[in-house]
Image (cartoon, one colour):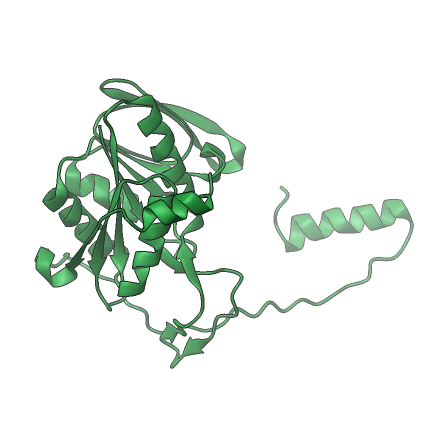
Length: 256
């Protein structure tokens, strides 16, 4: 089985991120693998153990530094990597086309894993665009996966903690959610072994992908400022509870 995992090189959410010229972030901050993609790689590694003669290929679009994220994927169980290099900031349309072209150039996919979203853009679109380009069925926010010879049974988490089960024919695209597994982080020997695993580097221009019919671009960026106005609620416990309910219902509008 040919298993592909699409991973993204993102800024560490714990880092102190600075915005430059209102258009980009200071990329000298630490970068790492998108946390949702860790679940995708972990699930791919688990599937490989179940299906003999499987191969896992991690694919990433990004700057040269994104090779570090591919090495992390290799240390977590991927067999080889493909890096599509670009200094451009790509939207989900271009990203999906680049990942699709890289996978087609590399081989045949039986199943493609992604994270359900990236923590930097939170677009939650790339897996659906990849599926559309391949004409594969897609599910996202998967919390359970069972793969047989030609089908996948997937449970996905919906809003409000509800779940829904899907039956997909292979090949398919699965967006991993946090509930799918607990990421297995590499040991030191795993890291050492990953340095010897191959990574194929391509430039985005080499793939010669067609321009998408639409595009998005960053107009400006600014730090989020949360402004809160504390308000004291007085009275008896019953009066305080009543006031809190009124606020939730009439002001916050989270109760009907």
